[in-house]
Image 1: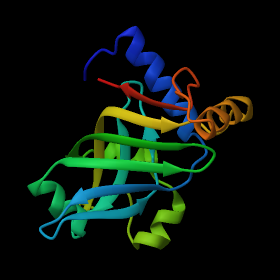
Image 2: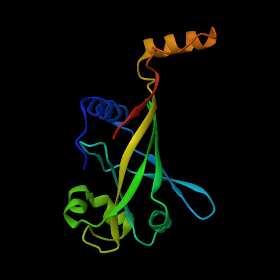
Image 3: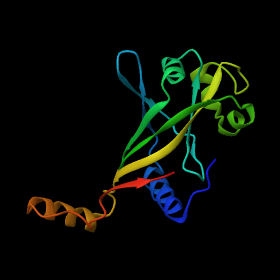
Length: 163
């Protein structure tokens, strides 16, 4: 784990704020045929900006991550966020227990200590976001864009480094 700088901490907190409450993320992996996106529930965005997901070892995404660890995670809701990073597969029963929800028992037909469960940790590198929650900033952005003016300084769309 890297120790985030002050700028990175601010970026991580901004991204955390923007994705808070968005129930479903789209995790994009690289298959032999090309890019594949799947809906996933984010378990957590930890203090260093890493995203955590739960999957099973017999899934396509598990095998794709064994071949290519580059991923993208997209969120759409009150804001729009696209996060690029590198995934790692983590086998940690205690972490699984921390994230476990009784709903998963029904959905996955298993328990948190099942050896076929694995965590996907996305080590986020950069994020691009469109913050549409601030109505004043959004109006300013749209007005400047409609007038053909530079939209810099509107803070609606930014790319930030997380690592």
